Image 1 (cartoon, one colour):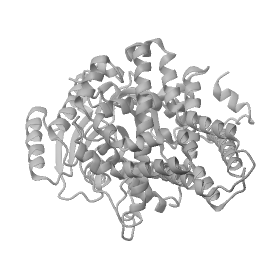
Image 2 (tube, rainbow, N blue to C red; image 1 turned 180 degrees about the horizontal axis):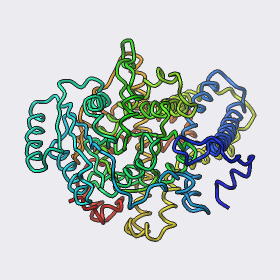
Image 3 (tube, rainbow, N blue to C red; image 1 turned 120 degrees about the horizontal axis):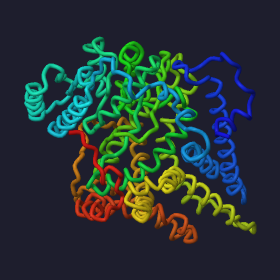
Image 4 (cartoon, one colour; image 1 turned 90 degrees about the horizontal axis):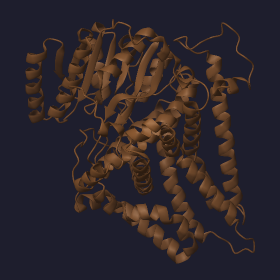
Length: 591
């Protein structure tokens, strides 16, 4: 019996002719049952963990500080719990009875691999001060791959530039002229004089000017790379499902010689597949859009997805920075589905090459997600869409709450009254182990998924290299977590005082991070770790064992950043095949 059949058996069977999602591939009642189950699982788990923690706090009375600790725990835990259940459900769907494709993405089954391409597709790459040589090379290779497929006549290729540096703009224009002379009239270049609305404004400008000439657009970032087979599969799915508004591909990291990017995306690769499969099972027609490597139906996007300009002053006003999720919920409000295709295909991106660039990107997303507070109650949104907006906010609120929890826990040493009641250390250890293992669930599920498939193990270089890379990535994540969380917490405090981010090109090349640069960006982590460790050592040395993983990450942030940026370490990992993704051994040939 499949997972769906087991779930449906808990409820009354749906009647024939019931309401379906816009594409007609799933009854709404099925998705409601799935969401009810996931809500129940998460609520029960959440109640159990919060109740257990409240019991631990109350062993010697319950103070105001205990209340703050409980609040911080309540805010920092939901992401862990949902990640656990998404991963567990996804792993079951991938390896349990039943067909995950039919259960999770039945819309894909309506598309034949032999169907003719009839749609008019615009491939649009948005640039701002990026390396033009690299960006144009990727776009050209994608075009050549599509041309070889025989469907090239249905595609037009657009470079949409927001570049404000004259030297880079001149290079873009020269590369375009050479490409146009070679490829003909189906390649285009447009440069805006300003970047009003940032990337979303750039895409909106294209839609307003050129959108009526095309049915679909494939949105790319400067680091995007997709194979023709993936593009054409997505086009055929969109053709077969006229009410599918956005189809997001599962984006994976490209092979990298940067040790930071290499290790990070190795862990992401494992965690994403089972997590995304589980999340897609219940999110259904209200799926995510990640802003790139996605195919969009232009007419409803133009009609329904214009972003509001938030009134007022300050960092949470003006144009929406994190445009993608808001465009997704607006598309769904307009009556069209938003889906993610939870398959590993030739859909690639690059990840930041070092810790400084990683946190800079994260802060830009943080500010954009905090703007969502003002969009949460937009009229006409589906309940699932409101949940997605709230969840995007909670992602960064949770990181901030985790730092607050550490500070409050350290202050707890001054708030303990003498008592004869022994502390329930066994329950405390159990809570720590449970929450820790739950936080690792997406990685464990993804690793299990690979280990259960002999062909996948071989693609990763064998079991030994796979497990060696997984151990290295686990240590990497343990060190990275507190560093990033503290940076987010500091930034969120700064937002209340008007601090903002700038929107510039990302660093993408592997480069050594100097000790001076690392210290300039990470001294707050070292200072916070020193203060936290010193306080615990002086007043509660017994608690040091619980804080060691966090303290190592904070105190070692600077050497960690420098080491994981070293090209020499990247070359060493490449030579030994550690933290390698399958594409490193068999790189796709895009021409």
